Length: 140
Length: 114
Image (cartoon, rainbow over all chains, first blue to last red; front, side, top):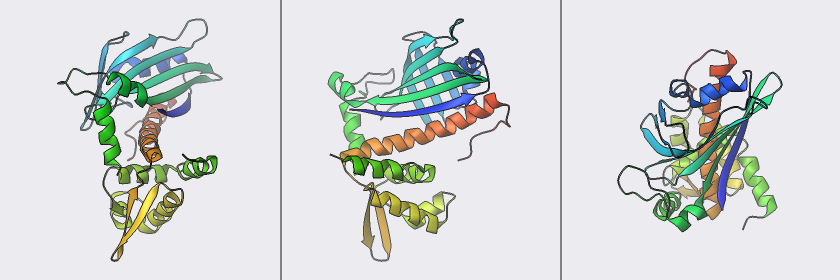
């Protein structure tokens, strides 16, 4: 089972300008989290601090807007210490008068359970079945 | 497993951002009362009760009366884990995208309202 949310937003700016807002840590601090660091290449580390919450993760895909069709995509994984990791995919498609941004966040629980979940730099916390059980217990 | 009708009721109940916010707030603790929720969120107690009834009717919340108070908790059905995750994460993206829209739309900048 994969939990998934999807949102779309039309922005009155060309895709390379939207791309900058999605990838420049200073611009990201204006909307994604209070403090963002991003090693912008596949496998690069990322961290996101928002108030008390610290998420760590890594970059999966970086495709800057194409000069021909203007489409671009950024995909990364993130998780706070006690939560299962989730995947965020931000896709840019040129639209009339600007750019359409599509956000998809997915939580592929079965895959994570099967492989025991990815591990992040802080300690040896496995973000897999245990966190999943805790998440279930927490809702009871 | 949920029938299509049930899923329809669930997503109908979750189409409202205030209800998603309430559900996420209740999912954070064992149980909550309408009075507690109304004191934490910018919504009247009467409106909170109305939203909680809609969530309970869709099977997302359990209602339990203890003395004069009614305690609401997120139902332990497997669906509710996914639903409360969707409510919380969806609500976070709504806030972030509002802020991004302000960044790029030329509207006044600022922190999203909470």
